[in-house]
Length: 180
Image (cartoon, rainbow, N blue to C red):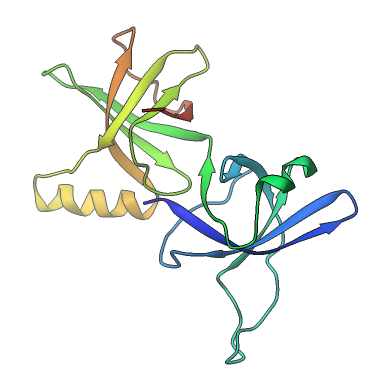
């Protein structure tokens, strides 16, 4: 599931541009890291704004992002709905199956990813993340999957590009969108 935000307003203060945005899918679970992109624009996370809604309740759906480059301000407009993106995933486990397919358990900081995506390691080996793999099996397998997904660890079918090795457990892979 993509994590999306709608820009409510922007503040240009001294040498920084602050983007105040509303989380559009409030039940989503995600991590905020140092490698974030909002609509493809590099951002840092800022302090959450303190504001209330019309009923006087705190607005817990608002987040502050700080543009890493002030020159990106012109690429954003109030009411834009943008996807939050982290440029890396962590390999928890990976397997080469007997039928030649590969499966990887990936920790995805901004939630479940939608393929196809290109994954690249530090040695420039590439894999295509094809799709989320639906797990079937015993009740214990089902419970394990639920526990992992609560920690943003998802199972994906992946396809190596120009090699036949699986990604190394514990490594970080950079994510790139595949142009169709």
